Length: 158
Image (tube, rainbow, N blue to C red; front, side, top):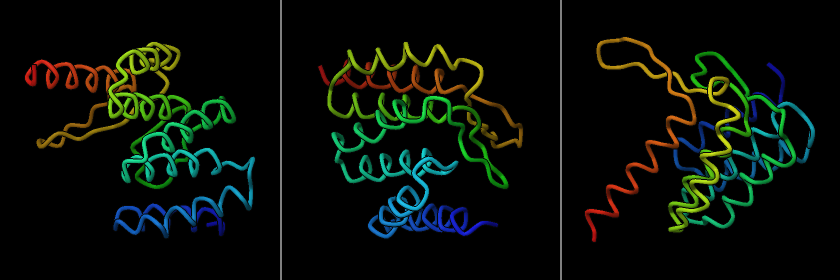
């Protein structure tokens, strides 16, 4: 395994352990060491996720938009037991939907969902249900679920 791949996987582990500052630094270093490399788009996406978890939605949005603009053809890095497959830009659009809804901007969320039509069957996440059956959901399906949940919650609050 290459040093950057190892650094990337360690940064993901740090993030899962809620060591966000350590993860953020590692992802930024990955981009700095190889700005056009195979992991730069994934590192930038994960920076967006870390900002989102810190409720820094504007910063998260910037990261996701940068993934889309700077890495339009990049694919999601896949390692052993990867469950996400497809284009990193599609994953970033799902991140934008989350940001838009967190900021109460339904129009932008719907616009991002529309853009996911370009990735309808090429970008997806694999899930396993309690009985062990594996199935996939496209990022478009997940985005629609987010918007449906948002609408239901909004209706309950009114």
